[in-house]
Amino acid sequence: MAEKSTSVNSIKPGTRVRVRFAPSPTGYLHVGGARSALFNFLFARRYGGDFLLRIEDTDRSRFVEDALTEIYDSLRWLGLDWDEGPEKGGPCASYIQSERLDIYNEMADALINTNFAYPCFCTAERLAEVRAEQEKSGGATGYDRHCRELPAGAVEENLKNNVPHVVRFKIPLAGKVEFDDLIRGKIEYRCDVLDDFVLIKTDKFPTYHMANVVDDRDMKITHVLRGDEWIASTPRHVLLYEAFGWEAPAFAHLPVILAPDGGKLSKRKGAASVMDYKRAGFLPEALFNFLALLGWAPGDDREKMSVEELTAAFSLEQVSPKASVLDEKKLEWMNGLYMAERPSESLVEEVLPAWKERGWISDSRSTIEHAVKVIDLLKVRSRRVTELIDSAACFFVDPTEYEEKAAKKHFNAEAAQRLSLISGELETIDDFAHTKLEELYRNISESQSIPIGSLIPQTRLAISGVTNGPGLFEMMEAIGKENVLRRISTVIKMLS
Ligand code: GLU
Image 1 (spheres, rainbow, N blue to C red):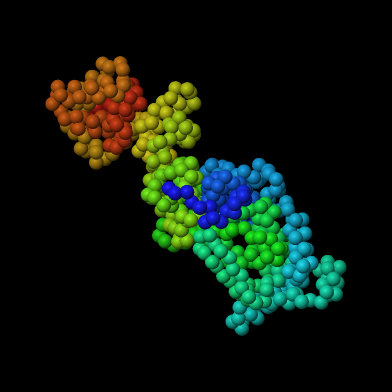
Image 2: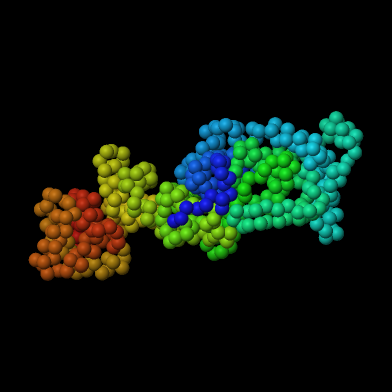
């Protein structure tokens, strides 16, 4: 692919790209958030920049206690390690907004001094009354700017008396605010649709707008890549940058992710947390690849791409402004590809705890070796780790039931006799390797004139209880001679 001109992504020559993922710890990291983090990560890696993690925890009422650890764990599990941020540090520490309150309050004072902001002493009751009035008259709702032009003396008096107040931004009364979105192009808002939003709340905590802008500036963020739902906040941010006299970063709002049926993502429809995907048996590398393709494409027909390939190909130019649909079938398909190529040794830790819990396996060295063999056989036919876990039963425990339809067909009149014959032959071989087993079955088939295609499903059903699974001879090797013979003998007894 041709090298992208960096100007398209608005990287100024000589500037180091710095991007951030800035989650609010109001819940777990879900796919939408993970996709934003991932695009930031790829963008930073693509242009040799820095990927920061910043925690936007200034809305204390929505703070969820264990959200932070879960966010960190989810990002790390996906391989989205941050260059600067919590638990890592960096030149702009702290990266947690609740630890930076002084900075925001200082900055708000600066805006009051330059007449871009003002303290507002309106009580919650008054605001509610204003709102009710506005709703009754059917007009636009929003702060009526009551405190915007309070006489200096009154302000001073109130401040001296510690009257609770917020700090509000003075939206220009006319004109418009515009910005270039790297994905959607020019976006314009009329100032008269924006109200004098709050910068600092009565508890001295900043609002999202204030803290976000101050930190992006302080942390030298060059590009803000975030979900579409933040687009309506951007005009406020742009006005704040102007008021401070700062240059705004470049903005890129990522397309909405829709549920498989085209509706909104919800807990029931795809909006699961990253850790839910882990628990559902997906591999991080598959989820990584899948998320990268939610709204972005390399511009050729590649779909399965490694982190390195994704990094080399990523650019904002190829991010579509159109909504993308979360197709779980595609994720499963992709996960299957990654399962097949994962070294079995590395899948052991994913499956062993579940197998142990079911009492199928213990901890000894030989069981690990056995587990690796089983995984070798199953991983190529499993779309999820959970599927691999479940389908392994026959390698560890004797079947207690047999597929009904298949049993009718294969456990027929000659079955007991044939299985006895096979069992007798199996007794004679010491090397229970799949190649030897195959040879043996071919010989039986020839000498007895029984098609091998009817011998195989019969044995398979007898030793596993089901008719599908990996190659029979590999499976027999992994199950082991003693177990195979016992299982066959159980069926013979059952049939006679
Ligand atoms: N704290 C916001 C969130 O939870 C960040 C939005 C942004 O990236 O500016 O998504």
